[in-house]
Length: 96
Image 1 (cartoon, rainbow, N blue to C red):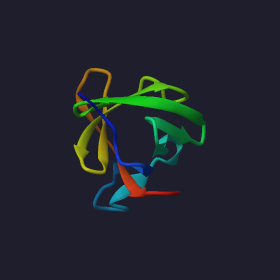
Image 2: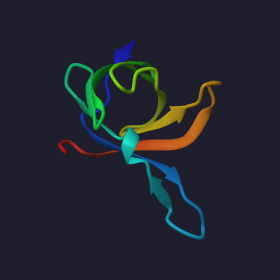
Image 3: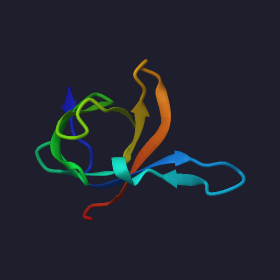
């Protein structure tokens, strides 16, 4: 079943450690989701598809990047081997 994620700005980050920041932002992969399964990033615009909890950028600069929906407003990166990676992207706002 095809679905969409809530619209807005998604900020991506990696977990930090006990000696520093809790999260380390990765702004070059952050993006904004809008209507009609479209996104924009600092690199350009494109489209995505979401089947169940599987989210994949299908066109544009982030094409081929895969995520798993882990919360109402959260995506976790899927590595090439299919395992969940450490980076998460969380919706910050409807606009932005």
